[in-house]
Image 1: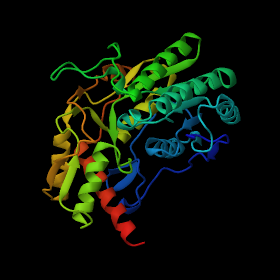
Image 2: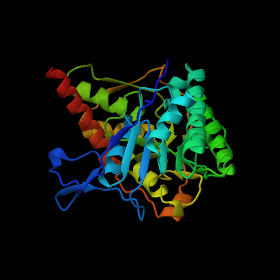
Image 3: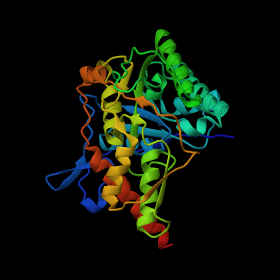
Length: 349
C-alpha cells in the first residue's frame, strides 16, 4: 500500500532569527551575500500565516518547510503515515492544523515509473488531490490552496516551437502527466465551487538531494562513483537529445511563496525558465565539473523518444514579479558535490 502523509500533523515552531551561517553550515535554501549565508527566498507582503505542506519529507517539501519557518510562518507538514487517498485521514490532518494556506506537494513524481504503475499513479495524484481539496472545502474553506501540478500536462511541442503558455491544450504523454492533468482540471472545478485554489504547473526542477531516478542526479551520481573508483568509466543514459526547461528548486520555492499572497491572483501559473536545454548539454556540463570524460552508453531502459518541453512563465512574472535567480551551472555543481559527499559518507560507515 502506498502511504504518503500522516494523520497527525508535525508542527514546526516559527523562526525567531534569520539564518546566519558559515558556508560549511549553510541551509539548503541559502545564498551567499557579502560572505554571509542568508535565505534567498522572499514572500512579499504575506504576513505570518498557518501553512500546511503535504509531501513535507520530500525533495521540495523539506526545503519549503524550512523556508516557511525561517520567514516566521506557522508551518505544519504531513507525509508518510497516512494514505493520501483516504479522505477521512486527510480531513483529520486539515482539521487538526486549521491552515490558512496549503501547498499540496504529495504525489508520485516519476514519469518513467508511472508507465509500470499507472493505476497507483492516478490514485495517488488524482484521488489524493481530490481528498485534499474536499478536506479543505469541508474543514478550512477560507484556506488558499496551491495545487502543484506539472508542465508535463502539455506534452511535447515541435523543436523550435513557442514555449507553452497556460492556455495551451493538455496533451499528456504518460500516466503521470495524465494524472496531473486530471487533478488540474479538478482544481479548476473546485475553484468554481468557491474554493481559493491556485493551479501551478512547474517544469523540471533540480537541486542537491533529489532522487537518482531523475536525470540530473542520476548523471551526477554515476560521475561521483566513477571519480571515487566505485564503477567503471561508463555513464549510462537515456535520450540525450530531449529538450527540457530546468530550474533550480530554490527558484520554484520562491514562486510558491509568492503565490501564497492572495493578491497574486488565481492562475493557473506556469513555473518555468522559458529556456530549452538539451539533456546532453547538461551532461557535458556535469562532466566538465567532475573533470571526467566517461564513455557514454545508451541504456534502452532509460530511453524515451526525442521530445521538447519548454514553458512560458509570463503570467507568473506579471502577477508576482518572479524571475529565476539561480545560475544552473551553480546548481549542477552543487548537485555533483552533494553526490560526492554522499559517496564519501557511505565509504566511512
